[in-house]
Structures are given as structure tokens and as C-alpha cells.
Length: 317
Image (cartoon, rainbow, N blue to C red; front, side, top):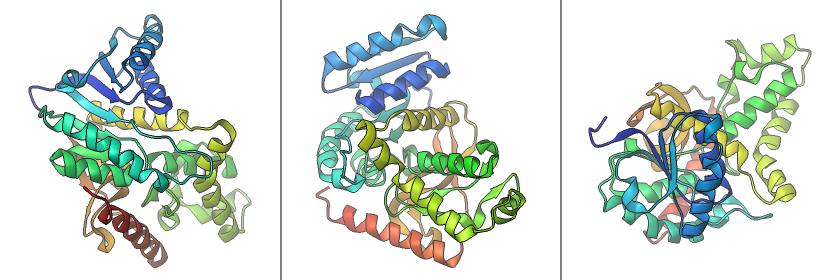
């Protein structure tokens, strides 16, 4: 790790529902000794920092404060959650132009300070914005990642755990591609503690595999829309996903997570950012993980990548 990096410092840019919930999760984790909050509304950042700081006596000693871009220079991880939120009836891709405009203001502020930490993008549409951040920042590819399909994968594991009445942590499966409507469930490589998914389903009395997998995939894909319709925003699930990604980086765990990062020929995909499994360490992406896919999954992943590439190519970057 670079000698100018404080390994126990994280910065959050954007203090809306997602940013604030993520900082709250990070405060409880005890991973960091310093958390700086930055927002266009400085009063908002100060209020969130004060509120979250009042929980410190019940966790571990740390410093949580509102700051500005000069405070991010030595941060190990710089998280960006700033941007317009997804509204009822709106897709993540509908947000693209609004949030690209915001990133055109944020990313140059980061790059001109020559930060050496990992840039973690959480704002939606996360795959597009991760590629925007990569292009505008000039950071090396391994240090620019998005939250990708980490949350989608967690939702999938939760649904499968409920369906099979088994601990969701024993479910091993990935959602890949866009964090959005073209996401792909990699059913062909899914398993429960090493037992092929269909075999485990039959052990638990489930035999209508095709119908069940279609229903679960739809439930997972639509869960964000359902939550937004009910409570106007999603933030707890993504907050715990952000905490997990930060945990892997801060602890140099070498864990495998399906984060947004640049593709270079994997499954015939090149020059586009999307969520695929990768080994994460203290400097970001260490290696891609060659997940096994059947022909249908490969075709759907390629279609997901093509859809993202078309949108990115139309942006004025």
C-alpha cells in the first residue's frame, strides 16, 4: 500500500439515504478510525456526522466529521454515493444523464488531488458511472470499482435461502452483468455448499426447477422497484454491501465479489464496465475470476454488456 495512504480512513462523498446509511454501517463495523463526510450541502454532512458520532460510545473510538475534498487525499477508500435517487417507475439507467453531470463535477476534484486510494462507486447506474469515473479520474483500472451486483447477489442468496430453508451464507451463486434490468443469474454454476443447485433443491422437495428459478430471478430483479414503491428509496441493503466491500479492501481479504470493473475479453466482452466476480484486496481488483457459464448465460451477459456500451458511447465524456 502507498505510504501516503491512511489504511484506516474512508471518505464518503454524498450524504443522502445511501451515503448516510453506509457511514452508519461502517461506524458500527469498527473497520476505520476516521470517516469524513462530504456533501454539496455542508450542513447536511455536518448533521449526519454529528448524529452518527453519537453512537461511537457503543462501538469503537473513531473520528467522524464533515469535511471537503482536501480531506480525502490520504483516504484508503473514497466512496461516491452522490447523485439523484431512483424514483418510483424509474429505471437505474433513467438516471444516467443527471448523475453523469454530477460526476463531471466530483471526479475532477478527486483526480486533481492525486489521491492514491481505491475509488468505490455506489451511485446509479453504477456500471456506467464507474466507467465515467474511470475515464475522468485517470486512476488505474484496478483502483476504480463499483458496487456492481454485490447487492443483487445478496438478494439472490437470501431468496434461495428462504426457498430452500437453508442458511443463505451456504448458498454460492452470482448475479452478473448490469446492476439493473439486464442482470444475469449464473444458475449453471450455483451450488449450496458444493452440491449442485438442482440436486439440493430436490433434496428439499423442490422439482419444478425452471419455474422456480424464473420466479426467484424476477423477484430479485424487481425487489428494488418494490422497495422504492413502498418506501421511496433503498438504502439498508446497499449500505451493508458497501460495508462488505470496504471490509474486503481494508482487511486485504482477497475475497471474491461481483464488483463493477473493466472487462478485457472475458466471455467476448471488451471495453465495458460491468459486474463480474473478482478477487479484491487492499489495492482494489487483483484478478478476475473465470466463472463458468452456459451458452444462454453467455449470450445474455453479452447482451447486457452491449446495452451498457451503447449508453456509455452516447455520453458526452
